[in-house]
Image 1 (cartoon, protein in one colour):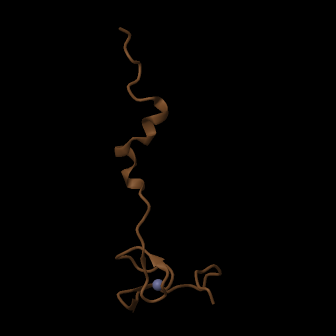
Image 2 (cartoon, rainbow, N blue to C red):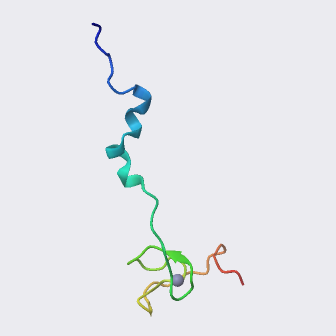
Image 3 (cartoon, rainbow, N blue to C red):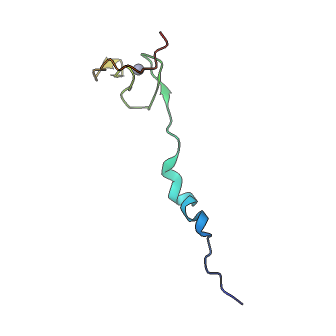
Length: 68
Ligand SMILES: [Zn+2]
C-alpha cells in the first residue's frame, strides 16, 4: 500500500488548533469612566483611567470613540 506523503494537507498545516489558540479575539469590558470597550485589567486606552484613577495622560488625538 502506498504511503501518504503528508498526513496533514500542507494547506491545513498553518491552521491547526494548537498553532492558533493565541489568536483568539481579545475580550473587552466596558470602561466605567468613558464606556468605551477596553481590555480587562488594562488601563483604558480611550480615557487613560484605571480603577477610577487617571494613570495615563491622553493626548488629544484627532480620532476618538467619543460620540460628542
Ligand atoms: Zn475609559
